[in-house]
Image (tube, rainbow, N blue to C red; front, side, top):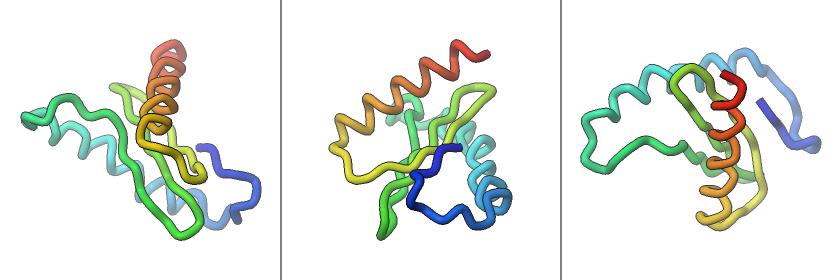
Length: 86
């Protein structure tokens, strides 16, 4: 999990447990005609949270404002890193 330096750390374990449920939810998208799941983007007052999930790993990161193309580039790079780590 990557949090920007200026963000307060707070209860990371509670946060991770809440987001971890997404690993199971990812499997529910398999039926979708929208195509493969790519990433989850959450919009907050002080930035964005991006969740990237692969088959056996995942990563959360926070960012400032980005274009959708930039979010896609970031998540593509993260997926590549996660694939190499497995």
